[in-house]
Each structure stands twice: as C-alpha cells, then as structure tokens.
Amino acid sequence: MSRRVVVVVAGLLYAGCGPDRTFVSSSTAGSAGQDSARAGAGGGGPASSGAGGSQPLEGGSGGSLNVSGSGGDAGMGGDPTPPDLCLGVACDMPPADTCERAGQFRSYDKIGSCDAGVCEYPTRLIECDCVAGACTTDPCIGITCTTPPVAICKDADTLTTYLASGTCSEGACSYTAADQACEFGCAMGACKADPCLNVTCNAADQCHTNPGTCNSATGKCTYPNKTNGTACSNIDSNACTADTCTAGVCGSAPAKACPAPAACKMLGTCDTSTGACSTPNAANGTSCGSNVECQGGACVCTRASCLNGCCTAAGTCGSCTPFTLTTREERVRSLTIGTQFLYFLQTADTATKVFSISTGGGAVAELTNMPAPNSVFQIHADGSFIYANQGSNSTPDDVARMSILGGNFTSIAQDAIYAPLRIRTNSTSIITGSTLSSNYIMIAPKSGGSGTILISSLNVNASSFTVDNSNVYLLSGSGSTLTRVPIASGEGATITSASSGETFDDLALAGTQLVLASSTRVAKISASATGGTAATLQEGSAYRIVSDATTAYFFHTNATNGTCTGGSEIYSIPVAGGTLRRLAIDPSTTCATSVVHDATGVYWLSGNTIKKVAK
Image (cartoon, rainbow, N blue to C red; front, side, top):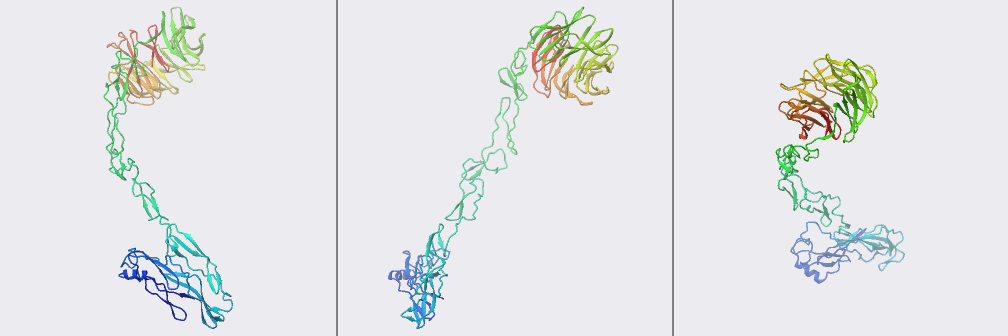
C-alpha cells in the first residue's frame, strides 16, 4: 500500500491519512511564503504566490513545489493549459518507519511518486518483533523492489526516470534515478514531442518558398518570400503580361513588347491567348541595305535594288553578263552535260564531230569525228555514255552510244524514226522524239534491242518532253495541253490545259512537280495531277525552262514581239514560290537552245556560242 502525504502550498495545509487513520502533517511553511500567499489570495485556486515571483515551498514530509502566478489568477498566469503541479517536486522525504504494534513494522520506500503535486510513498507492513521503530530481524526478507516511482519533470527541461529494479534497505526500497534532457521541454512526467513532428509546410501561394520551415518552438510554418521578379501564374488571363512576384505577392508586369525580330519585319503585336508575337513583313520594296530591299519579309537583291538588276544566289548584285565558255566557227547543234564536262555536237558538210569542254571553261577536246553520211542530230550524256541516233534522212536511224572519254558511236538498237529533235533517258531506256510524216516518241532499251514507237501523232510536240522511270510528260495540241503518257501502256492523260490566249513552250521536272514556260507565265503543277490547274509562279513570258529539285531557271525574251531580237534574260524562282532573281542578260539575238544545268550553273547555246551563268 502507499501512503499519501500532504504538501503545503503557500501556507495552506493538505493532509492524507495512513492505515491508522491518523493525519501526517507537513512542516510549517516559511514566513515569506505565507506572506506571499496572503498577498495573492484573491484567486480561486488552492494557493498562489504573490506577484513578486515564484516561491519554493516545502511539503509536510519532504517534497517541494515551485508555483508562480499573477495575483488572483489561480496561480496559472493566464495560461489556459493546466499546470504541471509535479514540475520540480522531488518525492525523496518519506515518513519515518514505525512500529504499528509489537509484532508489525511499517516501512516507506525512500523515493515516492508525485500525483497532482502530492507525494505518495509505497509502504509495507512486515511481521517482526518491532522495537523502537525498527525490526529486530532483517526486514528485507521476501521484499522485491520492482515498482519504481513514476517519472517526473525535475525542471522544465529535464525528465527524471528510475531504474526498474531497486534495492531494499531496512525494509524500504530505493531506486536509482537518471536525468534526461528534453529538447522540447518536460511536462506531466514526460518529454514533450517535437511540435513539428508530422507537420507539412506547403506554401499556400506561388510567391513564397515551398516547402516552408516549421518552427520547433511553436510548431508553426514560416514561408520566406520568393525573390522579387520570380515568374508566377497568369492572374489576369493575359498571356502578354509577364506576371511576377513582388514582396510575396503575384502581380502583373507591363504588357510584352514585340519588336521587329529582323530586317524586313515590323513591330508586331502580342496574342493575349498564347503570348506569341506576330511578325508582320515590311512592305515589298522597302530598302534594307545597300542594293537590297524587302521582298516577302526577306532582305534580298532584286532587279529594282541593283543598278543592273541582276542578283547572285548570295543576295548581292551580279555582273548580269553571262560567261562565254567557247565560240565555234561551225554550227553547234546539241549541248548536253555530264559530271564536270559539257559535250556538244558540231556539224559541217563533210563530218559530224563531238567535243567536250570543262564546265569551268578551258580547252576544247575532240571525242569523235564521223564522216558523212553517218550523221548524228542530237546527243544526251548519261553516266559513262553519250547516246545519239546515228543515220541519215533517207533511212531509219540506229540508237547508238559512245564513251564520254571518246571513240566511235556503236549501234545498240534499231530505231524506227528519223533525225531526232530531242533525246532523254531514264534508268533503263532511251526516249527520242522526231518528226517526219507524223510526230513520234520512240523508246529503246539502254541494254540494246529494237526500239518501239510509244506515240505517233501530229498533235504531239516531239521536241518538248521530259521523262522519269514511269512516264513521258509532253506538250501537245500546239502547246495547249500538258499530257502524261505511261511508258508501260502508252495511254495518255491530260494533266492541265493552257489558259485562254496562253501557249505552253517548254517543260521540266522538279521533283514531283512539273514546271512550265509559257507565253504568259511560269507555272507549276503536280506530275501526278489529272485535269488540274497550274499555279502561277511568275507572270510574263518564258520560252525555255530547266529545273532542279527546288528552283526553276527560265529564259525570257526582251523583244515585245516574242522573238529574241532584243536578247534574252535568264531568271530563277523557287518552285515553292518566292523571290524572283535575274541572273544574266544575254544580248544574243539567237534564242537559247539546248539549256542544261548542274549544281552550280546553267548552260545554253546561243548560235555557235556556249554560255554559262552561276545559279
């Protein structure tokens, strides 16, 4: 059993009784504590010290208690949390051992437990001969000390605990005490938990740091402001205002400006839904530098910006004068191009000769010399060979070839027509066009064999066609129609027709597009179209045209009557559409023929002169 003892708090007496139902009283409090108690007795609590501070008071049988208050506030200092009355109480003064009667000895443990500011000490009755408050035999026989006192707060920051097993002496148990520092304070016999335990500090808005920091003293979160100027979400539904944080608040900045991003662009406007700036083009013709002007939003050389009106691919003014590779005394009939060399056909009354010249100019080399009547009328270079039709006007020709290094022409197929006007090849075949009693398109294998007539019609222009591996594309109806004829079947289909008053004069392949030179314009249309409408790339007449995959190069006469009496101009224009460039002016009064090109230049015949202009 335990014995409850009293503790005097500020001069008031509390008492408990033992088994004999007699009171065990405390010692008397010091006069200073009594005076303080009287001064602060206005409250409703059991006792309070005066406003001057706390006053340690001693309990009746040992035990001490520190209580402070603020006069008339029940000793609680205004704190709504109940005070720990055992804070600072040391229950280490048990009552004295006594003889209950001659045969019973009452002992008390050396250390008790505090409950609501009152010390309780475990007690036991031991049967023994008891004389003068002591056993005459060993009173510890049969006693096991396994009920240690409860932990107490030694002070506001220290917890005192006791080992589970104690030792017995004179019939009383004592237990070893251990002090433990409490990081977050001690109350009600236990260390307080970290106030920030299980606290998650998530910022309530985007202008404070996230996560925040928990204050261990209060358990509350703090969130420092983000740096001024930090971007935050759009608060006004206007993507053109760059919202930023200022002193922890998200606010709108001035509207986004859209300056001109480059030459030939103008000040734009911001799209409030996307935040993207528009980039309007400056008006065509606006000067953007020396000899350059704006066209379609790009700063380029144009006919208007250069004094001579000719522009290079680099966008600077060119010389406008084509480069002459060679001029021959005898008639040059046909020009073709291979890798780094041009090949041309020169005829006289007694012989036909094939020559080569570098695409950069230089010496002319003779490759073959065929005496009459073994005439060659057109040549076409493809890979390692130069292909031609060899014969005379009185008998059908042979399809022949010779090495690009020189030598004689060798027949590889029997032709079915005479004196071709144009020769083209694809990966497997040689296609020629000729006219005699009718107009013909003939096909023969490169590997040798008999040629066959693919098309025979007076309606066909045998000198204006181009080919790929599947089709022949040709002009017919006196230039009124562009037709596609499959090589496998020979059944034609109209791709497009000329507009009223328009005549198609020449055509070329540009990837999957066909480009057309006509009496009124340069146009394009898909090679796979049927009955479609050609799109105009450039207004104005054109009479010869060639093209690579991206750009068309065409010739325009300067004379108003459609002849070349005033010379010719050479232009380039992107097949996708874009800026027109004049490359050169050819003063020759003979229209360009046999126009060919490679990666760097365009080459043509003007009479007996071979000319070149850089792309």
